[in-house]
Amino acid sequence: MHLIEDIRAYRRSDPAARSAVEVLLLYNGLHATIHYRIAHWLYRHHCLFLARLISQLSKWLTGIEIHPAATIGRRLVIDHGTGIVIGATAEIGNDCLLYQGVTLGGTGKDVGKRHPTLGNNIMVGAGAKILGPFKVGDNARIAANSVVLREVPENATVVGVPGRIVKISGEKLDHIHTPDPVMLEMERLQKRVARLERLLESED
Image 1: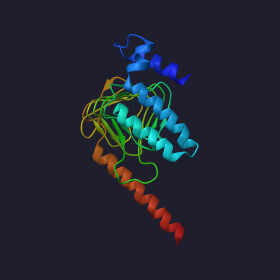
Image 2: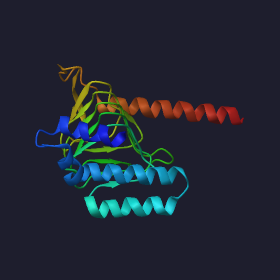
Image 3: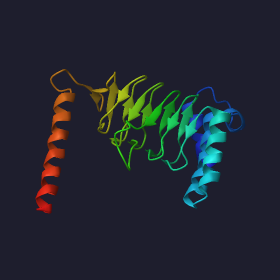
Image 4: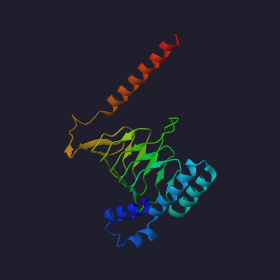
């Protein structure tokens, strides 16, 4: 069932896909997804070594690295695909499109949940890096070569290094309405300090 849906998704997304047979036999993104689904099933059933073996063989065969512990929804399309890396705690919703060179990775500073969560119907352009344990909202668009380090709202378009929101629901944002990354980081730090203070008070 997943395989048929995946093939149809490729044919919808790629105008160069001439037939289902061509997609099934020749598209490395689809092959990587098939390998991932087998490896993920094994991982969930505690066959960890075999799951990792399949994922590493898939990386060698396709140029795409998907950790078997990652969670991937239905109808994922990986276009071209070479150089894609999807980390162990990454989550991808339904109907997402990833181009070559995309990384769903960590920053090295987090423990537990380390990788991003993509909602549904998200497009991530070639070479984009999404790093950290935050969510990218439904229908978001990440431009090629962007580096995204913080949460992205639904229907937003993100460009640049570091990534900044330039559109929400098709509406362009000017410099006044574009979120200030320094202010967002200050707010995050303030919340963290408040949480730590509550923990200290509860221990007294």
